[in-house]
Length: 324
Picture 1: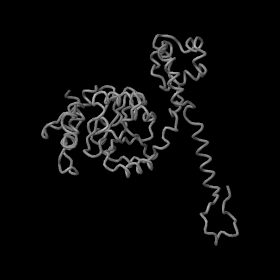
Picture 2: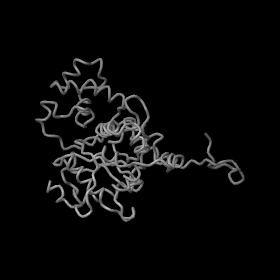
Picture 3: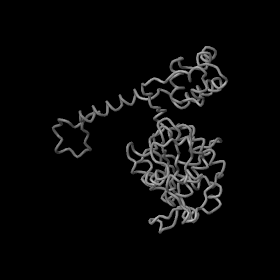
Picture 4: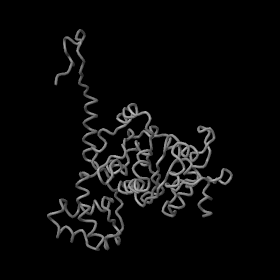
């Protein structure tokens, strides 16, 4: 490919110009080099295959060494790599399933952040989202995010319906992609195809590793497409600002750095009932519950287990969960 740098006809040429900029090229090279060395060199299919062999045997009390010794034809990684994968939560089996592993104190070295198959974001970036919205302006959007308590502890998956401003929250033991897809599969079974596709035609998530399996959200077990997943640009929380703003209500009741593992899903549901029953000026002082009921009907609210709290009984302080 030729570039226009130094061309004698640069000022008179009417063709589209191409320039080589050394600084920009160097930055792009450094970014590609950095990304290629981060995370795990493991695609989604390879992870599923390893998990299907290793996790059931781990849960039976076998060690990783024993598993690899007797399944060399099925496992493509070495023993050290398998321990690293298990230690970072890639397998459905956990460290507690390894009898000797839990006796050792963890090393102080930070674990490598989990990054599985970055190609999943191709065709799903924010520009693709904007284009899809332009072509389908009538489809509603559900924004996905996570709310952390303490590092390494339980987390919440929040699903925010932008139009009525109603938000659901689901307690998860770990911030991994499997827990997210499990929740969406549960919602699919609960709501059925028609209601699910009505609520989740478009999902917008950030770049967290818990959303690194878009296929698990988009497609059901029979291969039927039920949703479309897109991603915000990195470090751009304002692109799903409605969801972020609603987290302020959660933080009124559960302050930051609080261990979410002390709560049950019933308590989280109660908290969201109070939040969703709270009137909003931008909704004409109607509550998200009332707006959701107007758009989708009360039957879906009952399926989701969402209840309305009388206005004068709403509590948006930590005492709400202490009373229960």
